[in-house]
Image (cartoon, rainbow, N blue to C red):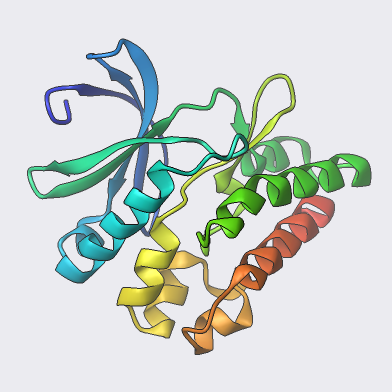
Length: 203
């Protein structure tokens, strides 16, 4: 139980930045997704401060294609984010199960991801951590993007080499491994990487 409110029910996935869980919001009686930030990040005051800045910006974002940020906080030293729960599968799960997608479907997903990110980019918010696990497809085929906020917090509080290791290594845009000068083109590159993998089944 997180903060006496969020009952963790099932692990959805994990990465170098933390673990995602399906949870029940006992206060509002709804299903949510809780991201528990890895202690190696959450214990860093600089990271926590930058993540807090990103959370405040994302909370006011109006972007239908992005899973909404509902809450954030800290419990027993663990930083957590609460997001709208999206029923469906990640693009990675679909690729693992079915193999490369038809060009029409892969392109549809990539365009939907760009459409989802556009309002965030217009608001000056970057993802910087986009991969197949962050692209969710609902049963009716809609595309939702999740996990905004963590990428910028990692990028600005870690060396370029450590940030690259935490956020995806070789899949990142070249500038993420060499410089802190990042903009919307960094996310567009990530969508290109995602499209390539959807089409070929290989990174």
